[in-house]
Image 1 (cartoon, one colour):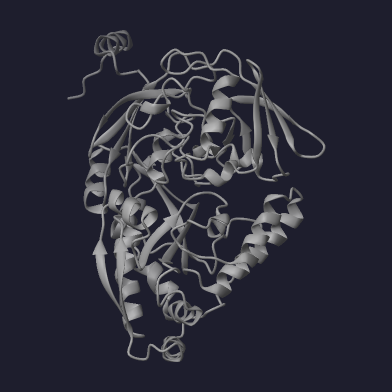
Image 2 (cartoon, helix red, strand yellow):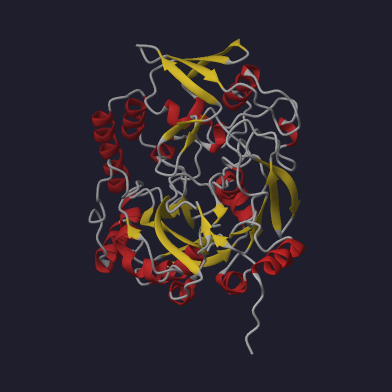
Length: 492
């Protein structure tokens, strides 16, 4: 029997329920890694920016969804003819989440703090060209550089360059205070981080009232969470073998995009025998990228031969520098004095591309005489042991920072790589604004790294985005390590 409800009665029922016609305003975002803390100016973990960038913290500029530089806390800027002076006009009426007024003094504090001798900023090099920061008036900041820096405005859009208040900066690891459209609500360690709408936001209000970032470390947990509706979106879905199943389900939108994530077999160049070029060349010849990609969890990825994104206009395809050749690898090891093989360790952080891809890599290196002891490590342990203390032989990691080829020029970076020729190219690049010349220098830098076989260059990490088909505004690509929710809403 068909029951017909009059229109007015149906409307009354809807009003009584209070939710029938209301547009949903909450979202649960699945993330694989839990951040070690929530201060993007004091840590290298991409998991921090994935939650707080553009949502909770803002910089002078912002990197948009196509990698463009956009105004943020600076509404505009002027650059002197010699490229040394940047005058930023700041947004008016901005407040921090604790009610403190934002002004040029906060910009000066943040930039001076980031470049200070005792700075804990993981990307301190971004600020190396800054000679002076002057709070000219409450809404004007003048930054003077010691040399022209073609990437300066882009650098100011990194998560490491967000603006913080001196009054609250010390507590940002646990209770972050920013100027963004969302503010911090709670953090249940091991479970989730919750942000809520900032009602006093200076800019365009967001549609979402609440956003929960739920930690879901692997496909075994991610798939049921998605299918049950407990999680609405995975910006980076650990889909594993279930990707085809999800793609065939009309409830979800699946978007395979690009990231800035160069996935590497990182090598400690400062330890014997990996300080020998012949040994690193042997490792490069032993790696079958296609097989590693097939076994990395998603089976997706673009092979790379140096530290650069294939989506970038300056990309050079160097995958044939050391083609897969196990016999050549064995000969190089013998020539270097290691005919009897090498024993080493491989520390693998939690992401599937590392844990699963690492198994394939270990098998490939074993075939040429390099025996690896696989050591799974949690993310916090990877950051302390590998990244900070450099206590490792090999590791597998994806470097998701944008345009970060300069990391190989840093004397204290965890690769322990030193090459004055490379450093000179990076120094020239840093002082060059002309786009054509910059691309030429990027090419030179890529070739040096490829020929030096500094690390095992594997593949560009794909962005496997999966979300409820009714959810709008999610980013298809990841030009920066972020889950920007500022334009996200549910379809009406």
